[in-house]
Structures are given as structure tokens and as C-alpha cells.
Image 1: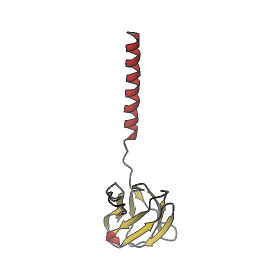
Image 2 (image 1 turned 60 degrees about the vertical axis):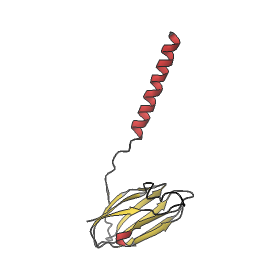
Image 3 (image 1 turned 180 degrees about the vertical axis):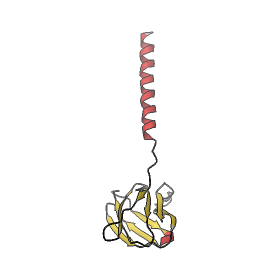
Length: 137
């Protein structure tokens, strides 16, 4: 009988540990990142390109003001890109590299950011969740 209780207690401890791990793995919503205006009037931000994600993944800028984005890929093998089709922004970023892009958004709205890279026949990086929002106010 003592062995059954011990096994039951160990099972309960494992179940609680797994449940706690699953609760900790649930992503909390991250607020949008409002890009600050530098003294020279340029809105500058760094965006990290990782395996199927952008950080931050929701960026807010002001219309009519220059934007300078530093795109840093932290992946070691997989290349990515950064596309905002409606604003004519498209930049490839090789694995482990950093690229700076500059543009001035004039159109207001919320536009998708995404990576359309893919290794055939696998789904695109966008289909795997590599997308975000670029909001122009």
C-alpha cells in the first residue's frame, strides 16, 4: 500500500510540474512598440528577426516622418525578409546579419509585416507565424 501512495504522489508531482510548465508557456500579450522620435526627427527602432517571429511584432510610427529600422537576424542558418507590401518595403536579411532600412511612410493605417521565405515544399515563414503589424498614425 505504501508503494501505491508513493507512486501516486510522484504522479501528482509530475502532473503539477507539467501543468505549471504549460501555464508558464502561455504567451502574454505584448503592447505595441511606439517608435520614439530622435532629436534629428527620425523615428528609429531595432527589430529582431528570429525563427518565425519579429520582436517587436507591432510597431507604431508617425506618418510623414522618416523611419529608420535596424533589422537584425539572430538565426544562424535561415535567411528571412521584412516586407510591408502596401508601403513598398521589402528587405532580405541573411542569417546572422544586420541591415538598416530607411523610408518615410505617408499612408496611414495598419499594415502587415511578414516574411515570405520558404523552403519548398514546406510552408512559408509567414504561414509559420512570422508576421506582425506596422501602424502609421
